[in-house]
Structures are given as structure tokens and as C-alpha cells.
Amino acid sequence: MATDYDAPRKTDDEISADSIEELKARRADKTSGVVDEDETEAAEGFELPGADLSGEELSVRVLPAQQDEFTCMSCFLVHHRSQLASFKNDQPICSECAA
Image (cartoon, rainbow, N blue to C red; front, side, top):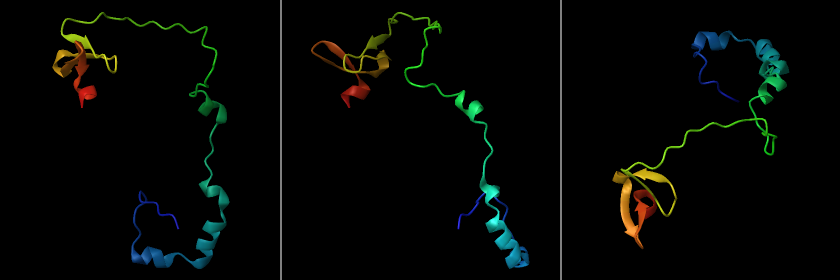
């Protein structure tokens, strides 16, 4: 039997007050666990792979690497100088890739 841990607890008096007929009626009621969800509304948030995005425009401002940043030659991500772990073949490696 599933337990709803968010439901308020019943006292012993309330538990014994539930009759067998009442419990059978709850079990027979199959619609009590059904969730009414609008499929079209739920599908609006999903984007299918291969969807046509030709009409969409992406505007991102790209900043050049700053003086206190470096590009790791292992993961090719831009990191702050404080994450510089070592140099391999004169190429900077971040602390995450060096570990």
C-alpha cells in the first residue's frame, strides 16, 4: 500500500472510525488517482529534435578572453587564472583536467 507522507497523520480514534465499506469504496474509486492534464499545454514546453528553427534568431554578445583568463587545451573552456594547474607542452591545463 502506498503511503502519502505529506498527508496529516490520523490518530488511533480516526483510524478505527473508517468503516470497511468506506475503505472498499475508496479502493473501488479508480478516478481518484487520475490527473487531468491538457496535452497541448504540456507539449508546448517541449522542443523536438530536428525541429525547424530557421525563423529563430539568436543574439549573444561574445566577449574576448580577458587578461586574467586562459583557455584550457584539454577541455577548451575559458577559466580564470586561479584555476590554472599546469602547462603540458607549453599549453595551459585547468585544475579540473589536471586532476
